[in-house]
Image 1 (tube, rainbow, N blue to C red):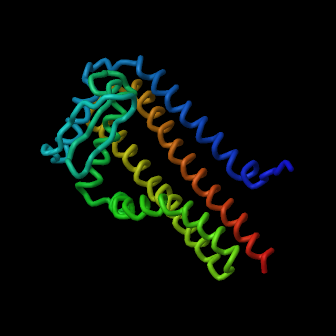
Image 2 (image 1 turned 90 degrees about the vertical axis):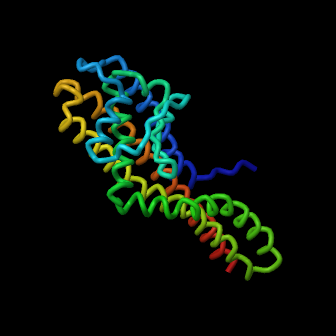
Length: 236
């Protein structure tokens, strides 16, 4: 018999479509502004270096890493790694991305609370994401013999909920890093005023991917609550 999962179609699918659109949008926006080159001629790596030095972070290194938009700040190694399409590029998009990563380095230096919280819950989130589905499946199997073991399903849902918490904490971290980046670009005269739009739109598109990720996590969590919460009520 055909089973129509309305919880996925109504709740999760729109969020998944949003995430797919956000991913395509950030790639399209970066590609568009990767051809808008800064008239000052500084590379993204140089721009990030200036932001770091302006904040007294001379000890933070900048390295080249392979891949496309694999840019990130590694707080353990105190290294900003910039991808092939960013490191040596003079485009407004690349400069925006590089300065965003420098913004993360500044966050760590000033002990910005959301990023400290995000780093603190990463190990717990990783464990929870690995345990969530096994606990739910184990709860389904064992509760058939002993209804008292249904709590395993709730434990699995709680573990899955940690991913939503992580995405929620990530939002202010990413938005703040972008704000710091744009302020640093403006105050450091890294781009002319008419070039700022490229960096701004690239970072805005990237921010939407985190909003979409949160939407997917929250709707999936809600779906699990509806499915298994309702099943327990029916069993009772």
